[in-house]
Amino acid sequence: RMTNARAETLREKPAFRNAYRRRHCLVPADAFYEWKPVAGRKQPYCIRMRDHALFGMAGLWEHWVAPDGQVVESCTIVTVDANALVGELHDRMPLILAPGDYDAWLGAGTGEAALPRAVAAEEMVAYPVSPWSATRETTIRRAWFPSTHPEIPQPAWPGKKTAYAGCFGTATV
Image 1: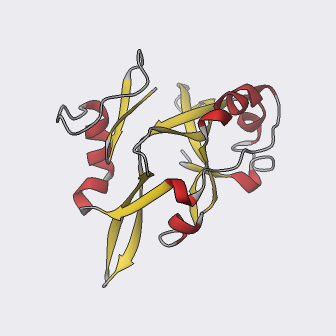
Image 2: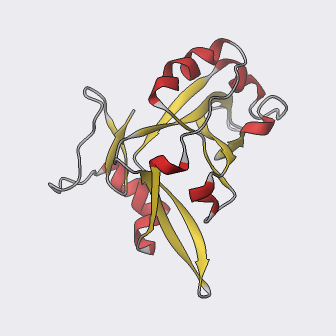
């Protein structure tokens, strides 16, 4: 039910403590959105890697039993203090891992591990987009019906199922 998990409290919060010790995952994406108040309204910004590359956000997954008895599998994105770029829009951001840190993060699911450093602000870019582009419904719709427009890159992780589309293409799981 919780979308984000603050990196600083993963060890203490009951909702994330066990997953932090045992169940790490990567949440693939090519972009994420933050909203900034501008002239009495909120302007969405698309934030992505400067080179348009797909990236992995540190995540935790869990399975739990819902009140109706159904077993639910869910995941959450680990967040950290915003870097200089994202800090202009919001005080938090996803923990975006450098590709060289993926294996260490995934392998850490057998015990607590130090959190890797997030990618640097200089590796990212943010720009305003249409409010329609950043709605939950649009993101979900694009996740299941990825664009076939020739200017939008196709998934860079071969052999994987398309799962998410953002500002510039698709990411996979």
